[in-house]
Length: 327
Image 1: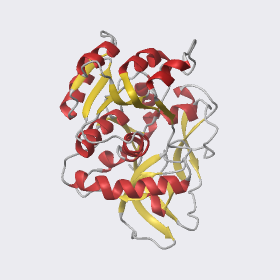
Image 2: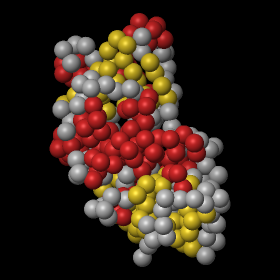
Image 3: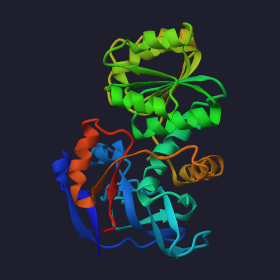
Image 4: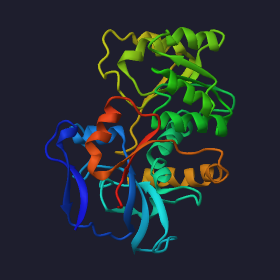
């Protein structure tokens, strides 16, 4: 048996509880991982609320860091190796199974807490910037929610991989200062400034080549103003609402905007394997040289999972909120 976190019924953070369930058994091509740490993601909140139709595992959590305890199949890993990666649910638990081809070796200098803050946000940032956003060297990218987990990863990758000009928005000065410390070139407090006008000012009236949009409806009109002709716009969240009234599609046509919506969690195992392996070869050297790093906000024991969820829902975090599983 093992400790793990489930939601008693769809609802708020008070529905989360630590229960005892049987340990999973690795199928062919899977590792059994003893979980040391896991990290919170917005998709965990959606799962708790019963709003996702793509997660079948009742145990919440999609990323972990831990040690290999069992191997079923041919693997480059050995028992006892320290690994991190995406799982198909079940991350808030003492044990979880993971496809062998999705496991990433934890860099030598990283703690388990730092490692758990990497997989979901860095793979999402890499996917949205490089695979979907096709960010090129010296282009300009607007990253909303710059102090979020994905935001902090995207700032670093945009600077290191593409030498991009990075413009970020956030709603608190301490968040903006932190984004600037990561390399953001222009910081905008969206609560106090009209971010579209600030973007135009920073780009000589041209707008940005790429937008990473976590907000959705609330920022729709200002994003249209902020993006340049032939710009790319990747929608990866709807924190500001999913319903937009009176959309003028002709504006999208006039600017020849490429608008793409994406989620990483419901992607296929094959897709996650491909992006994981490209990420390992492309980005791992930067981790090992200390040129990019994970951002840990606050660490909670597993039993305080409800408090951790409330911190994320209140948008208090800068970087990743971590749960310590192994006592």
